[in-house]
Image (cartoon, rainbow over all chains, first blue to last red; front, top):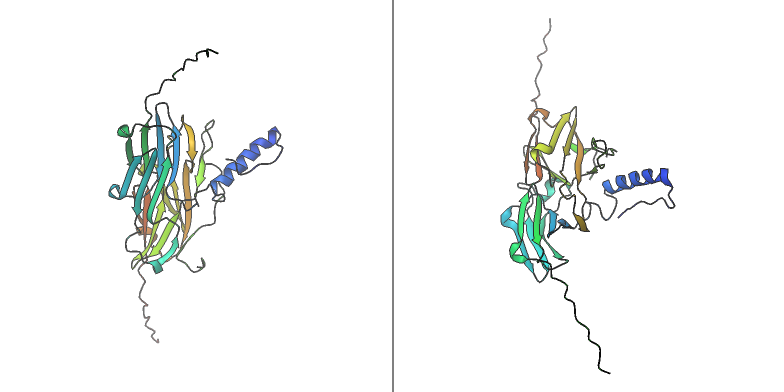
Amino acid sequence: MPVFRWGQSWDPLLDLEREVDRLLQGMNLTLQGRSSRRFPLINLLDGEDCFLLTAEIPGVTLEDLELTAANGVLTLKGVRKAPPEAQTESFRRQERFQGDWSRSVHLPDRIDEDGMKAEYSAGVLRVILPKVAGSVARSIPVTEGSD
Amino acid sequence: MSDSNQNMRPAAPEIQTTSESVAGSEPRMLFNPPIDIYETNDGLVLYADLPGVTTEGLELQVQDNRLALFGRVRNDQDGRAMLHEEYKVGDFLRSFILSDEVDHEHISARLNNGVLRVELPRTQRTEPRKIQVSTE
């Protein structure tokens, strides 16, 4: 969603507008930005035969990561531990999320829960959610009433 | 918390529009990664969240008194329709001003599961040395 609009843009301004918008989105000025305390951030994409969920969860060990799907809701749960040997009073800066977290996502369509696959690398979780084989539209015959 | 008296502080944000965008390709987003900095007995420890960055895509540089980190993220979300978007895929850039108390020669770093840990040891304080004064 654009965060910057010039109003009635004419063509030469459109590039500038786009550029400024991109800059603003890159800075953490908007609610959409990475400053939001929501953790982890999730994207959901629609592939041909599956949905792809990606989540930015840097620094989680697999034992602390839980993934469940039921009734069209996918739930991610986990813990992000504080850095070792760090005491609260020794922090100069503390911007990274820590503690328990949990996110639930409503899946937009029926998925094959047995066919779900997930992988975690470089702090990004990718979950492949296969769609249930396309249900064929069933045509309902309409008969003319007798009266 | 004042920045003036710290051994290390984030440098003023740099306005940089793109990270060497290849001609014709989409301009890339650039983000300021969240960080933690804390003190230990040996010096300072810096953590930065860099999801999607691998060691090949990470550049960490110390020049003069500036520590700069740049993490490149490969966008593998192309070609699919976005249904729900909370984050954009982009590269990470942040730089810090180091004080003289940090031993620039012995900075070490590790990248694990998208989290960078940088150790910034304190320079050994030199003992005051007595200078003998003699008369001729």
